[in-house]
Length: 119
Image (cartoon, rainbow, N blue to C red):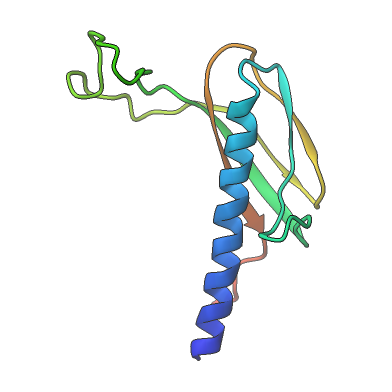
């Protein structure tokens, strides 16, 4: 039973790492009109199986450390709604995703595996 949990945890860690890599890739390029999403495991290999992705607009307040602003996160209630910009799925390998050229985005990546059967 513990081995099954460890395997599930390891798989979960891989997807978290892949999601973070996808977000870093997106934000490192600045204002984009399209980007390529590469989902890899912790060793840098493309993930087996498919994945689903969701790109959402980042509506949080933009703050720069050390620069005072009127709508800082400590003075203004943040917006919790992040409108979807793009959704999709891939059987594996890189996926090209088109987004509006302005704005910031969150990318969520989940494994595209069937749900376990009900007991």
